[in-house]
Image (cartoon, one colour):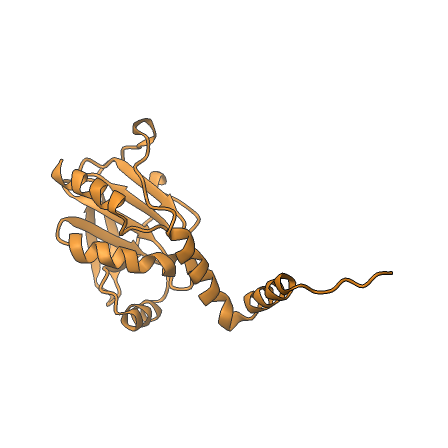
Length: 188
């Protein structure tokens, strides 16, 4: 039987797989891979025939400080709804781009980031990363059109309640293409 020599690429693959097995290195690698993916993907509007209209509704939420609130969706303001978690590598990867868009559009667009995690865990994550995003805990079942089992899932809803963008997985929300879409939705 002939012995096979290990090549450099075999060694690199072995180390990569080993690093993915180790819990302390798995998440940073997954975040880095999602960041790499985001270099090639930016959100785009759904085809007109695929855009679903929601009945305007009040999203019942709790702030991270425990205050209850009601946020109107589909009424006179563009909404950015994000379902995410602090433990989710694709969520972590796209969060800086969401923060940049929030910094520039926070007065013109209603940002609603939703998680089911413990508020203290979320606050610690936001503080560590220095994010100022408005994060809430949902207190109601979302309308069927917004029900999605995977995270992150993000929706852009126009002023009349139409879902213009639905993206699942990490996406570069700070992309020029997305900002143009957002500018058009705000102006309409």
